Image (tube, rainbow, N blue to C red; front, side):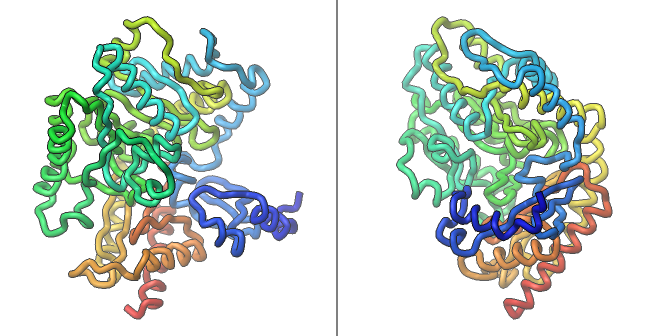
Length: 454
């Protein structure tokens, strides 16, 4: 099919019939959007042929870019052998079994079990079920309250959206009543007049205060991303995570690390938890586990939790039709094989990530940049009208939206969150490709500053 010749019809059909995630339906029905037609290496192409360097790795998931033939071949071969069978009723399949072991091999020693889902949202729903079952098995069903953070993102199902702390998501649904939220460790927005480490301790100790308020006997778990991704690449002060870990350990609270964005090399190690010295009891994963080539998520379950679950009779009444789907598991195995055999994570951490962060810091002096923050292979650039007051560039994040659209037009795919430009390029970028990313972002900042008369 000639995609370019058919673009107009495709766009019309899309506007007429397709409801998109996180989209203003009325605006899209009127103005439409892009139709993506192909991708190669780290570049994506619209149906009109516009080429963009993908500075977001798809949606935080294509850490290896788009040209990984071995993943395609693994999925294709599996579809020809066993395209589907469920994992209910004491059944399994070879790729799911092998992927479970492969995931155990790349996690800390205390993790020896995995529960498969199809997404991070479903995995965080599963966390709630696992936590509830864990305490029921111990005869403590009253421990059911969950503490999360403001501006966190843990998925889009009703339960996962409630775990998250994003206002618009909470406003549009009647959620569950047993999730409570504390402040995020966002120094630039919440505590810029404080010493960063003092701020980190203060915000971490809100967890302890919330546990005391709710009663330790009622609180089951604390869930958090090592780095808040969709919330704006929020890099916690160094003091933050050690204090959170201390509180969870002393207060008999399970710690859930949502690794959907941080996992599989984004922070410089296999897991963001390792980067920050966290010892979670449950770890949520998805996205980059298959390099985005197939939908797959899950929960890594530490022995502390698994031993209790395995010691008690009775069915765990939870599951998904596609849990451990053989083709998705085959994609996961092929992805992990590339990451391991190619030494991709260590190479990126040693070479590409430092170059990326160094080049980003060159933007810190730009007249509309209030802060540059990053870790490993993701980062955010906060836009301001005035550096000293940190006043946003424009109301309702219009400045960042303008900058994002400008970057897209220039050939760079980046995202906007609040007043920040956020990016998470593939781990396989070259230094020259990182240079192109930074140069285009710098051009977009220049155009934006001129547009707002700064």
